[in-house]
Image 1: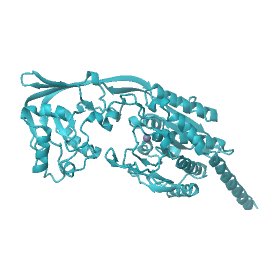
Image 2 (image 1 turned 135 degrees about the vertical axis):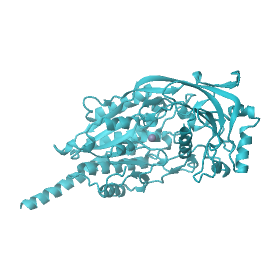
Image 3 (image 1 turned 90 degrees about the vertical axis):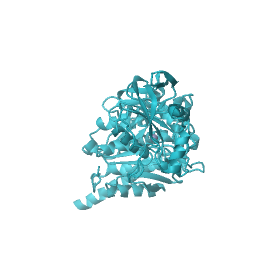
Length: 526
Ligand SMILES: [Zn+2]
């Protein structure tokens, strides 16, 4: 009898929850998502860059929205304050002076593009070395560095490698993996400053006209491990004409040296004699509140409500360019942020809330190096060992169009089809994989499993991975408008956005609502 009763009540409960899910699902609509998106990716929000008034307005919009829905704040405030210092390259105070042996100035320019701002203004001086591509192959057969003394030198080098340049490809201008390796080797050799120039084989020659300029002109956060470079040296890009001026005492041009390396297959590195440079790389700084917005829906079980599922999406974007044109960041990441408002509303509509709590964290400063999520995992609303899962949404509103070709930061553009979404997961839990699979079939979606290696730069789920918390990211792919002025609301696939929102609703609901914690089969390797 007792057993029968339990069976009946379990059956009824299951029905109740199935009904609950439907209640939530029917509260998610593309029309509603559209209206959120229209505001959040409007020109009036000026690209929502952290450290700007527009970013504060964006956070206020989220806060007042969830307040109205009835979510609970973290402690007594929906804002999770994060006071920090932002630094920015200051081109006005920056220069490069080329001098001869007697210290006489030969040439001067303020056209140095610092890829990232330094933590503070830096002045440096040194002799010049031309180091070709600054490249060494693994076999040690080719080395631009072998026969030159690099200690305390200002190094002039080209982007890419002889192989890539020789291949005739013109579209990959700067591969972070390759350059990182090169920079690492040069640092070990004790160089004082880097002056990069795009190699003459590339379409892009003027660093101020590349996508990197957008980053170079943005404010970065000073904090451990993120944002601004804490390197005691200058790291700048110069134009080819400036490189030619630096090389002038040798009687050779950059193009001469480039051609020589490619035709002979041999390095052409040398000390540029009779010349030295003085460089000043200036930065300006200001204080800001890089606040996150947090809203909580308490679980319905008095014990299990102390555990939670977290949703994250970054509400910041990259602001405006030097001409004042606005990066609206509709897909990146108004889409994830506004999907989370829709999710919060859907969960609030449930008469019976899931057993565990749901924590919504709109993180700030993702674009400046996962600042907000990094801060959250150090100051979580609920302890991380009680956090079963983070579901991160970053760019969930696009499907492939014929315009989506080419590369982004050296990676091939790869957008999902209609009805398809990418998932990044460490696959620690077969149970979770199963839940997601079911949610996908319920919402008519197909999942492209990307594994844990995020190709085109990570997102906020990585902050959770770093702390050993199970986390997954949904993403519809890097497209031709990513970090461009054209990432606008009219290019969003709202049918897909609705599907993804429903998929993650079902996933989060299931994980939060199972009596037992989802089983972790294997811990993360890192
Ligand atoms: Zn993003």
